[in-house]
Amino acid sequence: MQYITLDTETDFDGWRKAARALVLHQVKPADITWAVQGGEAELFAPPSPSRLPEAGNGTFNVSAKFVELAKAAILHRDGERFSILYRLLFRLKGNHDLIEVATDADVAQVTAMAKAVYRDEHKMHAFVRFREIGREREAHYVAWFEPEHHIVELAAPFFAKRFADMPWSILTPDLCAHWDGHALSFTSGVSKREAPGEDRLEETWRRYYASIFNPARLKVKAMQAEMPKKYWRNLPEASIIKPLIEDAERMTGAMIANAATDPHKPQKRPEAPMKRKSATDDLEALREEAAHCRACPLYKDATQTVFGEGPKSANIMLVGEQPGDKEDLAGHPFVGPAGQMLDRALAEAGVDRKKVYVTNAVKHFKFVPRGKIRLHQKPNTPEIKACRQWYEREVSVIQPDLIVAMGATAAQSVFGKITPIGKTRGRLIDLPDGHKALVTVHPSYLLRLPDPEAKVLEYQRFVEDLKIAASLQKKAARAA
Ligand code: URA
Image (cartoon, rainbow, N blue to C red; front, side):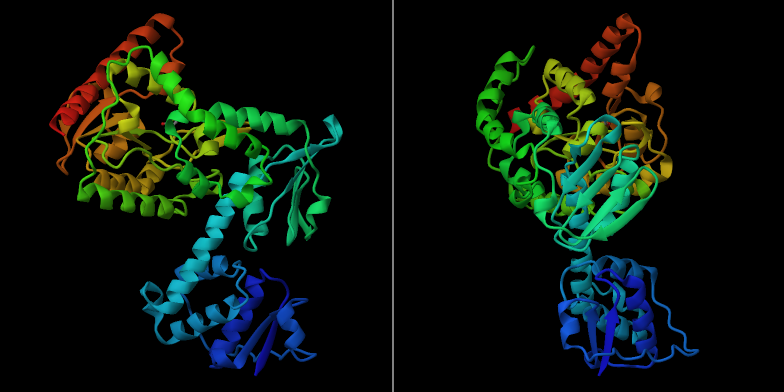
């Protein structure tokens, strides 16, 4: 029996070095016991761990896919992960293509572990809330978080980029991450008692959360899935979630009553046909898959993937450019200033947003940090192309009667090539896949126009374009 002791729970390099030597010596998975220094399994190991056999001259290459999966899966909390990974590696030596066999039990298990780790990383990015200790020049920001897996080192660079100009610490029971404005460092885990309690930032968070909370789009189940209750206890906004939910119905009623022009009484759609039902299931699976998308580098700095939203039965699909700052934090498309402009224009055109599927060509926020502000950056062609798979898959499950491309980036994604807005705007165009498209401007273009007169005129043109979508929506409602 070989006893291998790794330095830490996340010692991928140590595992890789040992595993490589062991595979080259054909040591069977059942003949190895893996432990971590100071961990439980080490109690059962002999006083001095086995010496690794020399790696020798043998060669053994594994695919980049395996390395990526293994780097993530090793952060899983399952105590068996080192041996499961070794078993897969051992089998890969004889069958290099095994990694592509998704139904293989080892491949499936390692993939599921990696996914759980990415999900946990995503939750950490979204749910860490810093509290201020000290004031002004002495200010330091401290957060408490309880990760499910060993993800602190994986998740910390995100916070270093996002909060580059403030010194912070994230305390967890496993490991604490610290940023002094220049470098990241790590110390051992602490207990929750050491985390600071309420401070004046709490109120700011609560006000921010209340401002982005849109009662008309409230889906309690989806919200709980995105923000599982176990995270609530450490979130300042948790205390207002319940009252906001309770108030949502009243607020939605008031919003409908106060809409400037809403000739369109909400229609009750007929029961969803079978095709639509399976489409929803597919959309949920797509959303989950997209949450872990690494097809371009934008996921690294963004808080989360902002996937499309809207009912399964939508016959209009609106496509924007990419989530902005507010959308990135909230996880929903078009909830910030451009979203408010869009809501107003849709209502004026007679389009019921609740019946529309709203998405973006690019699903991660691209920005450059400028002090405390994140400045929006236009996505480039490789990023638009990398993200197009999600748009295509959304179209194929929603099957909309009309796709409205708002702005140049959306048009590039919808048409699959750079498409000038001026030449195509305001008329129905047949897409090669049989869908119909309409090109118009992006609502943030209207927000940016400096001349008030041009603003009014352009806004009216935008509403006119959206009226084409309104007439289609009404026709579909009559036919239903
Ligand atoms: N701009 C977009 O294109 N999409 C959003 O979701 C928000 C702003």
